[in-house]
Amino acid sequence: MFKWLRNIFGSSKLAEIENSIAYKLNVRGICPNCGCDAFNKGPSGGMSLNIRCSGCGTKYWFAPPFTPEIIDNDDRSYNLSKTFILKKFIDGEYV
Ligand SMILES: [Zn+2]
Image 1: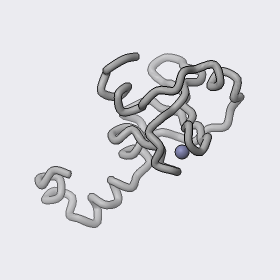
Image 2: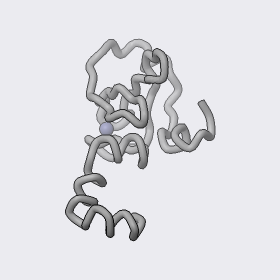
Image 3: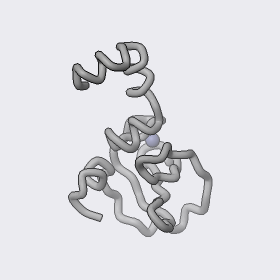
Image 4: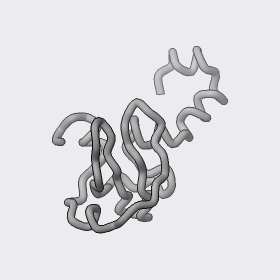
């Protein structure tokens, strides 16, 4: 993590940010629950997307920069989606 951020927030605040659901999903692209980096896409609308972790199956409402929320909806559309690496998606490698 950047030194200037540590200077601004202090190390305990920074650890809190790094452990947050928003940082893990929106920045690192990993599941806050299990650390897996692969997901399946579910329903989408507007600028938000529903994603399901390939590792543990937790589903999230994903719409950076907003804080993700854990959701529980039908698995059918996720089952039809190819597994993708969320970090690549965040970095714009494909949509
Ligand atoms: Zn997971």
